[in-house]
Amino acid sequence: MVAVIITGSPGTGKTTVSKIVSKNLKSPLININDLITEKHIYNGYDEEKGYKVVDLSSLSREIKLALDEFSKEQLIVIEGHLAHYFDVEELVETVIVLRSRPDILRKRLNKRKWSDSKVQENLEAEALDICTFEAVEIHGEKVNELDTSDLGVEDVAEIIIKILDGKKHFPPGKLNFLEDYLDEN
Image 1 (spheres, rainbow, N blue to C red):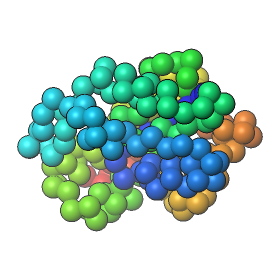
Image 2: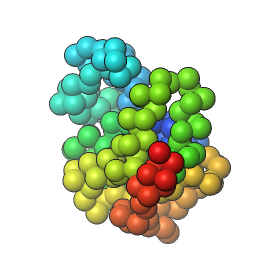
Image 3: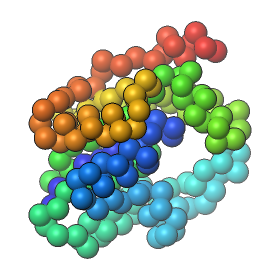
């Protein structure tokens, strides 16, 4: 069994794209946010920022337990903003970090009716490449970084499948949204 991790800042398309990839590959999908809620893998709730405080070591352990439920021959799709923290390297084949320009991301997050401070925090994280940096730190050369700003979800899913087939590679470090972020703010 091997896993593909689809991660990135909120609003980059992870959940929608992962469902399409999972369906097209006939692969099981593990949604990290659902797992966190279902298994109560958090230590509290940050009222000011509006998110759960997740226990990352317990999250990794619960992902491994969830993977044990599937066939050893299957490709498993693991999706979520914190999915790249799953550090069982022998099980991780590829990590895809979805990215989006700040102007696009702001529109997507505002549609969710998030507070201005929460939107701003996520825009800053995206501008500073936080998910990519963390993913590379944990998974090294297994990481691909894909700009979803101007692509439809079907197109992104198709590109991910090509990455998994070895037909495409998007090495991290080529996307830089810091200037876009600074221009917008």
